[in-house]
Image 1 (cartoon, rainbow, N blue to C red):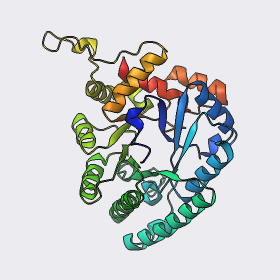
Image 2 (cartoon, rainbow, N blue to C red):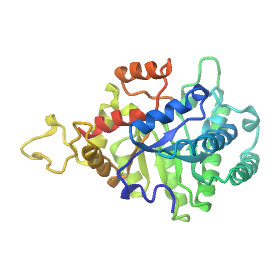
Image 3 (cartoon, one colour):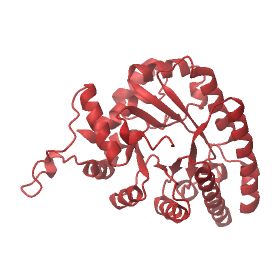
Image 4 (cartoon, helix red, strand yellow):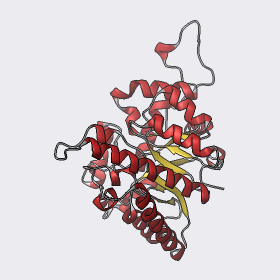
Length: 331
């Protein structure tokens, strides 16, 4: 059983996408975990973006899990597509200089080493991710980096090769995936659908989802989940927020007409009561929607930013902000 199999049977708070390996957390992990515990966050899924962050996740769990048994830390390993996107923070020229076949061979070897390191630490990987494709950065390159057409084409080729390989690795190990699909939702959905045709156990989450209502239905029809985070609280995310709310049966006041009436089954989450939180979570999970922070990124609101600055001395996101996301789609 993978970690997604049981999520519908529980109504607990789970942060399904966290970059606890980030340098900004080095001095703050105990505070981060204490705040999660106080907010009744029961699980934090640690995603990786490359070899170093995969190993760092192993080290974090080994160091902190026994001291914080109330918060289960899940090990994520993998290679984000940005390792082959010129101009990104984790761009790796050694990978980009390879052919797709050479890159696959290189990544397979690194996975063997990561799995071996996890076995030595007696920690079982729980997910592969984050992985995927991202066309935003190659279509909107950093001003300091000029991309040629050849660079773009090569990046797309390597991204797709890396994505397909890691989907196969996930299926072979019965591990769910966390998929990054910014400006490449349609392409990622098609690839997942294709591979699921031969790997029926392939499962996972389209993390930080910002696509449209049709894509939500396509993803959930595949048995996959969408991950929502602080983005959904932004004023600019009105369409996304409306799509998710309709998916879980929440009808906004301005949408109630004599034709649609008042939805008696709509989630109502207006206080901090555990019963209401549980009901809201149940509705999300039933519709294949999960919560995430993508911390340290995507802080939900200005008010929350200030409270986080007080906690950490800087604007660092943490798992307590999934409550803001839950509130935004459930009331």
